[in-house]
Amino acid sequence: MKKGDSHTCAIKEDGSLWCWGYNGSGQIGDGTYADKTTPVQIMPSGVSAVALGHSHTCAIKQDGSLWCWGRNSYGQLGDGTNTDKNTPVQIMSSGVSAVALGTYHTCAVKQDGSLWCWGANYYGQLGDGTNTGKNAPVPIIPSGVVSVALGDHTCAIKQDGSLWCWGRNDSGQLGDGTNTDKNAPVQIMSSGVVAVSLGGAHTCAVKQDGSLWCWGNNYSGQLGDGTAWRESPTYIMNLGSGGSAPYIVKISGEFEQISGKKIREQGKFGCSSANFAYSFIYLMLPVFILFALRKFKPKSNK
Image 1 (cartoon, rainbow, N blue to C red):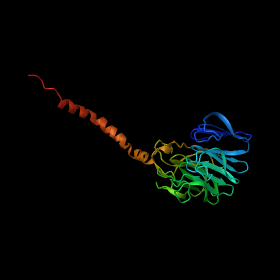
Image 2: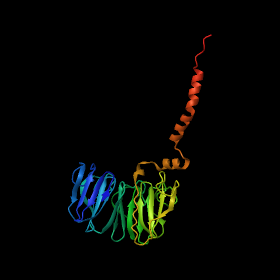
Image 3: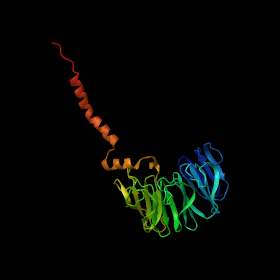
Image 4: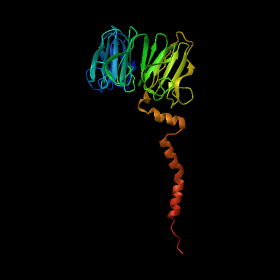
């Protein structure tokens, strides 16, 4: 079962796909824009995987074809248009092994190991060397990719265990030691990575030895290292002995609507400019009151 911002989809044992929830952009895929409070069948059979974004949905069928629907204002469906679709539209006819959806962009891994992305690209999250959105799939990495994860940034794991990331980086979520957005893949770890998960402004990866590494914004302690801010991978804990351990790490993307710069300033200095103003007023209020009382104190009658 997968959930998006306000909708949910599930695949049954018979390969049928069912979705429900908010449907304002057609992300349920039942041909309407009306919300559904109970599961509705979208595809009767043959579905092997489903992924949900903020307000669009994609499914892979057993024949390797990729189908997407829902909001398409940034071209995130990949059908060559920017028009919302309330029923599944075929994007790739065969060869798709994995798909991942971000807020407004989509990436797919094909069986030959090539990575393709499309949709919004204002942070360089597509990775094609530009910041121009694409409404159809464009090749990003020609071979060797085994998995991909999306937020407002993108990370991919290659067959050699190396981790590559690109896109939004105002909170150091790419892990390359900077706060500069990147519009092409940058190597973050050279080997040993088996899993990666992305939040709105932080990232975590698991290595073959079971070690968990995280980086990016830490305004609520989401990195788990007891500190504030990390722009490169930081060891957090060991999840197991390695080998066949079932590494499952999930990250919330709720930070997406918050300014990383403002949060970083608050984390570094302990208060935001707004908090400073409130504190100043609170501390000075008694002085103002005393001054007013002295100035307007009525004269005594002689």
